[in-house]
Length: 311
Ligand SMILES: [Fe+2]
Image (cartoon, rainbow, N blue to C red):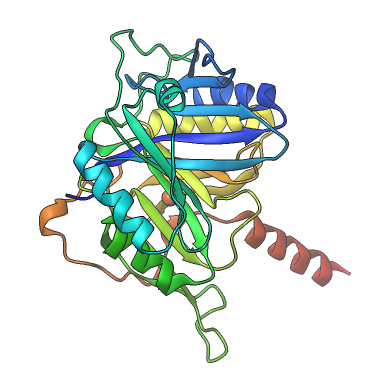
């Protein structure tokens, strides 16, 4: 058995109040009682929390935490990761308790992207009530959403997730941002699924690891109506739109990207493709988006060209 799903995210920030604003007033997450160790906790469903915001002296994603089926599977994974030469640090009983898990360990992929793996998850009977009236997020068996990392040692990092951790290839494209000419080598991407129907629970892009520790995370809303309302909130609150509304070829998600206070992006989307993980044939898309998704850097380039032409 491989990985069940993305369970929760740990973020470190100098400014927990700004993350609180982002999560409650833009995303619609529900703040619950702080962790006994002082971290702020936010729910998007019946898991005891999905975001754990720790105060510290940096701005970054500290861990994407993935769930294993049971203690034996976690122990077997721990062994494989250690044998692959990656550092493994067991969480203490207290740390596991405040995460709402039976046990976990910390590690990182060959590019240094930080991960936690756990088993024994916790749910609550307290209803999820969004402060914005968001009816819910698409989670359940599909997990919280996905996380996307960068890796300069791309092939080795993909091999780590596939051969050591146990994710499975869904879409293995190369994207040509420079037009695909002779001088454009393209950038490798890997979209990998866990043992559930979400098209990808983790993805990797070929390139240097950003200071924020992450490229983007993704949350799925139940309808385009909810995505549109979130998009309006982003604009009203003055958050930076990293990519305009659009639809991806590979997972069919319709949504947009907003810059989080952590310096990485949050993709907020809907209508994501659900795959049959046991019978999936790996695809190799050549484009990222069917429509939309104008990236902030593309917009800036266009504006610079326009002002140059006007001079
Ligand atoms: Fe994404």
